Image 1 (tube, rainbow, N blue to C red):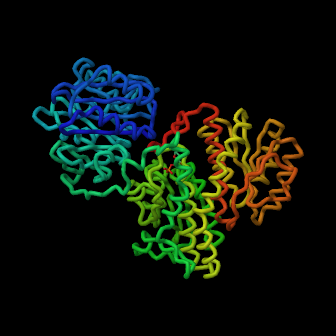
Image 2: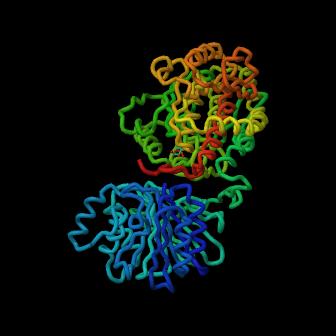
Length: 615
Ligand code: G6P
């Protein structure tokens, strides 16, 4: 959600800022802008509605120069995606702006601040909450003070979530950044350059050395270095982390879209999540993050999984896994619901937050609420150093590499495998025999190769997509371990193709969705060979009897379905608990190809953002 990039150094800033913005475009893409300090004195702001390409054209035309600047790609919260609402926002007159600010997050007391500032004579050009902060900085800036003093003072009056970057012609050649609730990091460049970004993708072309700011931190960046401060504690030291991937990792590598690239990365992302973690002889899994923690997992009596979107679907698979192998009661909660309820969190509860980005505001808030109530918390997170990863007591990284496509694909299958590893760990300390554990380990070891097999179905699924690309609606049905897959398949299709799709438990269909079935309704059945296969066959009969067009994802040649379904997609067989990894992939491909055929922007679907840092 909204991307920020900042640069101060000796080179021209605009190409560096535009390159950073392109790498962040997946975070939000309804408008974009840059502000540059020209010769250190004049502030030049260019902004445009639409994608970064529109901004790039405008920058080429206006040719702003300067070696210090900030830039932003927006996902609208307050006010529509117009040029006026695009960031940076400025203080001073339109002709001679003197402070520019970009912001990710939501200022909750913006209305009050706006009214007070209007009373002091400030006029507002936009409908955004952000503009209040830039005027507030101007209002509070005392003569002779550095920019950071005014920013710090302003932030004590601001409520809500923010990651900000600010520059000013009144104190040039410096960027002040701050964070509270929205991610922000410093990139330590070599040879007199410093960068800032809302995630590592913004700075990775220049450095892998980053400093993650904590809530309440602010920092001053100049070409010579940086200093970090906390609003209450004064100057603080924040450690430098090394990003483990490089700029090449976030290229499309010959694929037309990130989504397709990431679908095809799944054999390697699954190898990476398991690397060094499987103990075949013991039928167990070793998770370093858990081992390093003093907390005794034997005390866990119940697990609450909290997440959003695709991560929530992975959580549902986790529920079935933990119940089956570790006999633990599990609740899976939408983070946005959990945080505002009054959940019963008795002794022995473990809260498990699942998040690809590690920055989702609702998941973070649910996690904080659980921590506040004294509950032990664990994370299953992809982005190293992200806020959720740093807030949980311990956890397990996915190591899936950056996921850029807005529709999550490889993170989902890695989340399921991470949950299987955690389940093994818990199960082997309670209800899972060594033989059963070993069976799971062996099945996990085979998964990456089986995924390679599934990916060979790509052409077949592309042809299938052509047959269904004009459908108005889709229904996805599954039972047991395949129910979350039905939900995920429907979500993928909705996200990228804008076709209305519903995922439902196959048997529950009789209590409503069956009324929707006619010859125009494609129904995707998840019907691999598992303990509920026979029941799913009956549900397929029910749809067939009403003329529905059926696509069935199976795990053998399923003779029972001959003549009953229109299309069979066959994936390899594995344990029922791991089948979701294999059955999901054809649905990812189906959604992808349908969306491409419909001319949709697969990597940046309308209205969506990759990392949702507002509630
Ligand atoms: C957004 C993304 C989804 C993602 C969800 C949760 O809605 O578009 O793909 O599943 O957020 O994100 P997280 O990073 O917490 O897994």
